[in-house]
Image (cartoon, rainbow, N blue to C red; front, side):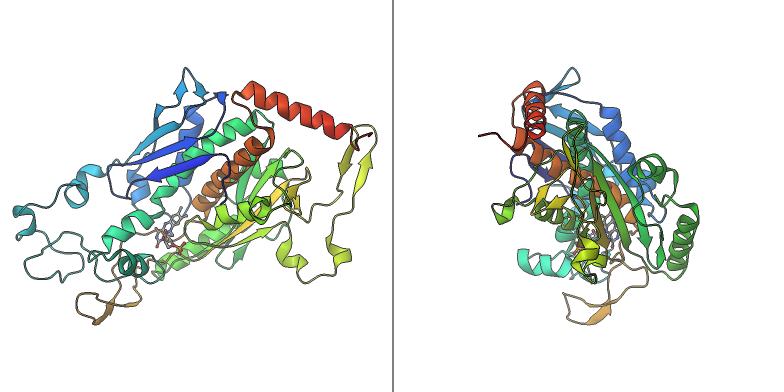
Length: 413
Ligand SMILES: Cc1cc2nc3c(=O)[nH]c(=O)nc-3n(C[C@H](O)[C@H](O)[C@H](O)COP(=O)(O)O)c2cc1C
């Protein structure tokens, strides 16, 4: 639902050989900087509170279609992100049916109780509460819950970050910029509200928790350390901001064209994100309308309509009005606990502790980078819907024409 003109398909399991992705719908002629895309992939792997795997990974997107001589071709962009740890998983995640020697002796099931004669390395039979393990296992009728967790893993978000990277480069040609920062981890909160765009863009990445305020960032780090000492996990809140948004993205005319709804869908699709706030929505719900809505003014020199405040966060009626987009996303604490919760062994029906997979203590800083990518996808999609074009030059001509039209508003008919 959230994409109308672009298409993104991703495939691949967390410990499979690679993630494979196809992004279709960007015009030809968008300059492509692969270093910037790899830099975003690196930002996704960072952040205080991540686990061991992030130290092994060094994700890079290898383009195998849709880009030539540093520009998009208008054809589907196809890219691969390899799993550097594949040699250690080849045996467990291979596509071939296991041979007799694979299933005899030697390897010990992670569940610790694989059925006799089926010694299956890393088989998972003790579903983790808060993960797709059990619901997915029941739905897809799998006896090894690894068949579910491998795809449900947030590893897939690397594909999205690369897709978002292409979209950011397209959006830059329309002057649109995107940045993100972390505003809460557990009970440690950034008190400042309405952090300006330049501060977010220029300072968030200097902090290990991607927080723009050192004192608040310090409290966040302490909270992560305390949770880690307790063998526990934390969630939090991040904000994604976008500026120079053209007026008129999205539409009020149909429920599934509303841009705020498309953004919410895209954000909730990121694993572990459970609520989305546009603008000051949570505060506004407790205020009278007179304190909330943004007054409209007119700049007669530039012939632009302005909002001295931006509490709506960039959309009214599902349509952008030119103000910055401000989206806050609420992430639940990670589900895999090193002190596992109660679960049930699907082989025996007995009460057991859930299996423990490698896990982060906190991934809010990384999730914020994924949030940037998802906003970039939705905005690139909405720009292509509004301006169209098969080449970037055509899209830009249509965009400039529309900006001109707005300056002449209202129409003299
Ligand atoms: C960047 C990122 C990293 C994540 N890392 C972990 C992790 O290490 N351990 C964990 O239990 N969940 C992690 N998650 C969350 C799970 O993937 C997610 O909670 C799970 O797949 C269930 O989906 P749901 O929470 O959307 O219902 C991560 C999420 C993101 C966005």
